[in-house]
Length: 253
Picture 1: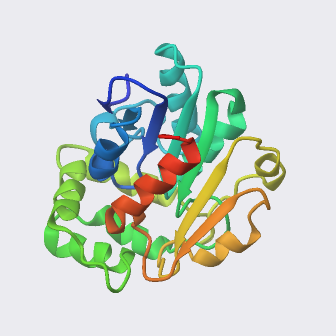
Picture 2: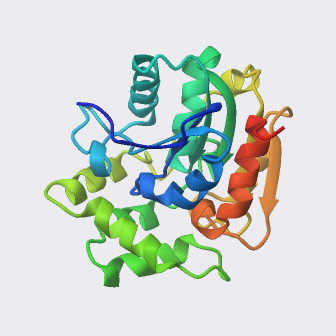
C-alpha cells in the first residue's frame, strides 16, 4: 500500500512534513501553504494514520522512516529537507540516521525519542477519544496554557480517527509508544554524527514531552525554546514554525 501525501508547490527544493501521533497531514496546511511559495512540499500521513491506515506493519517510528524514505526514492527524490512534529520528529531523525545522504536538513518540533519521559497516560486517552467531548480535554492538555485550541484542530483530529479501524489502530500504536512508562531513545552517537543542519524547537509548557529533553542535545543542533507554547507547535505557532523550517532549509536566501 502506498502512503497518502498532500503535495503543494511545483518548484524549488523538496520539503517533507511529518505529523505527530494521532494526527494527519492536515495539521501542516497553513505551514505547507506558506512554504509552498518557495519549495515543493510533501505532507504525509504516517503509516497507521488517516489515509495511510492500512500500511503494512505500521506502528513504530522505524517502519515510518523506512516507508517515507522508500516513497521518496520511488519518486526519484535524492535530497529533501525534512520537518517533523512529536512522533514525526522521531521519524524525521531516524530518516537522517538511516539515509543521511537523502536528508538535506532537519527541523524537529517537540520531537520524540530524545529522552525517556513521555506522558503516556495522556497519549492513551488521546488515542481512545472518539468524540469531541473526550478529545477536546486531551488537546487542551497538549496546548500551552494561553494557546486556544482551534476548531479546525479538533475537526482534523476527529477526521483522522473517523472510519472503521482507525481508533483501534491508534490504540494499538499507543501501547507501543512507551515501555514501563518510558519512551525509546534515539542513539546519541548516531545523532552526533549527523552533518546536515538540525534545528530543534520546544515549547516550555509541553505536557507530553518535557522541554528539558532539549538540554542534552548534540552541540551542533540549533535549539529554540518558546516560553508560552505547549506541545502542539505547528497548531500553536504556524508562522514561527514555518519560518524555522525555511531558515533551516535555506529557503529564500
